[in-house]
Length: 340
Image 1 (cartoon, rainbow, N blue to C red):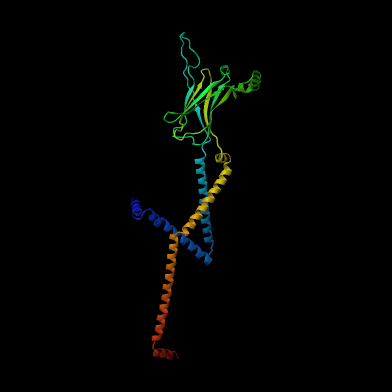
Image 2 (image 1 turned 135 degrees about the vertical axis):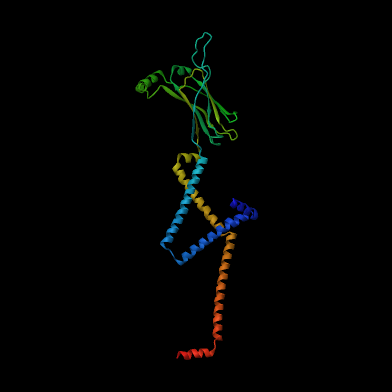
């Protein structure tokens, strides 16, 4: 708590710009200057022991690995944000109103309402990406029964609604079972009879109904709920499925269909721009006013120290000369005679 208080107090007293300059920029400049100075001194002295070589190699390997992993993470984040999910599928559980007893107390068979269903596309605010075209279709699994063959064409309608219940888009498309002549149908059943007997295949068709060919999500009213209705009371359906497929083009198409190539190119480009940004930042720092002032101050201190050392040595020499001049002659003669 005291650290946060001191941080707020420092920012308030110095101002954000001056606080960042004193607490971040100047220490960084000092660290860079000391590192460069140490490296130059060791290079000039020629000291290249095995330990120093290993340390330098480890530092270079660490910096390189950090840059590579940063490039990989940047590409992964860009892919996650830029390329949406290619497919969304939801099961469609159709409901209808069954017929009851007639006036003659006979139970009427069949459907007394159109089969309809409510599909919740998402519980979140949005699942589809804006600006991305989507192909939307409904798959109906239908038996090749006499009722479906006699049915002919039927309509499939869908309503897209936002979270507030308002309709965003709607579409109606016609569909029917694929036609097969009597001869082709007989040959098909004879050929696949063993599979029909053992249950590995069935007499059914999957009717693919395309509802939208290039649907784009609305920016202000994203789709959250879908209402499907099959407008026929005599249709027979096994199951149904709602699918939303993204139609990629341009860069998204390349990134999705050639992931290895696009990843290699993207990571290499990220690594190049990160290295370029680091070099530009380095040159900006060493050419900044703070760094140049720091260098000038450091040079002035070194020069003053050199002058002080020189003056101290000169004073010592002068003191020695003065001692020699004041030394008595008798003492010198006595020392010489004592030597003999």
